[in-house]
Length: 187
Image (cartoon, rainbow, N blue to C red; front, side, top):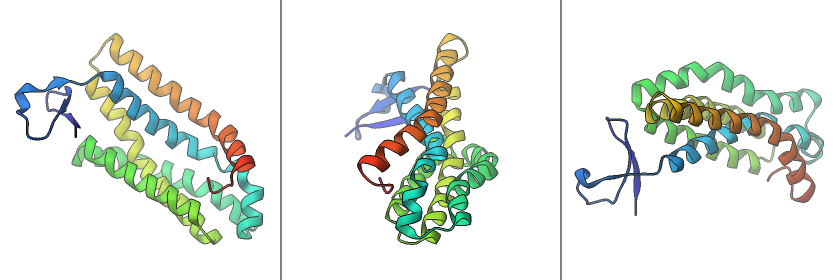
C-alpha cells in the first residue's frame, strides 16, 4: 500500500508505510496533476450536468418549475458563496486534508443526489455537493501552486488545470445527455 504525501519542502513523494521518510523517492508530478485536474473537472462538470436531465427529473420526482430551478442553482449558489471560505480552510487545516474532506463531501453528496426519492432530497444533496466543491476547488489550485515551482512547469500545470476545468463545463451537458439517454438521470 502506498500513500502520496506532500512534504513541507513542497516535494511530492510516495512512501510505503513503515519505511524511512529519508528514503522517499519523488512521485511523478503527472500523477498529482492528474488527480487534482480530475477533481477540478468534476467540480465544474457538476454545474451543468443536470441541465439536460431536467425533463426526466421532473417526471421521476414530480418537480415543479421552481423546484427544477433550485435543482440546477443550489449547487452553483452554494459553490460560489463558499469558495473563499474553502480557500481559507485549506490555509488553516492544510491543503491535503481539505482536499480529501472536500472530495469526500462532494462524492457522498453526489451519491445521495443519485439516490434521491423526493425533490427536497435532490436539492439538498446538490447544495451539499456545492459545499464539497467550494472546499475542493481552492485546494486543487493550492496543491498545484505549491507543488510546481515558478516557471514553465507551473505554467504548464496551471494550463492543464484550467483547460480541464473548462472541458468539465462543456462536457457537463454532453455527458448529462448521454447518461440520461442510455442510463438514467440518476447516473
